[in-house]
Amino acid sequence: MKTLIQTVTVLVLCLIAQLYLPWWIVAVIAAAVGYQFDNTPGTSFIAGFVGVAALWLGYAFWIDQQTGALLTEKIAQLFPGKSVAVIYTLTALAGGVAGGLGGLAGAWVKNAMK
Image (cartoon, rainbow, N blue to C red):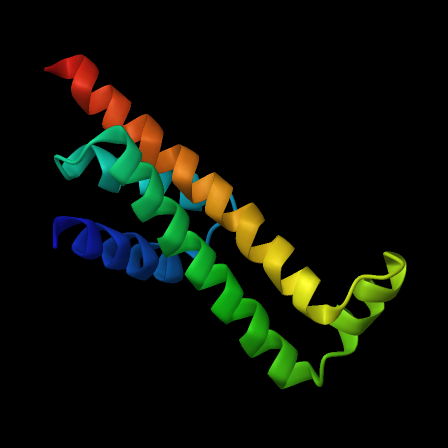
């Protein structure tokens, strides 16, 4: 249950921060949340990964719907054989890795302080 709450906290805080701050703020937020929650480093990595990946996937899909998929189709054409679904997956993975590593770092700092 704590992992779900941590994941939702990362998602909501990153959603708000992404409106005003640069993309890399997701790692800082995931680290801060990972520090606050007393989870294992692996659990904090998963919570940060899933929270940010879900956010970026949802945001990419929302932008795609608003623009009629113009940009995503053009990006997919740059990579031969890649579909729009692969572009969505790569977007979610990129955000997820940043959030996951942030959560992992936060949990490691918490463990080091004990």
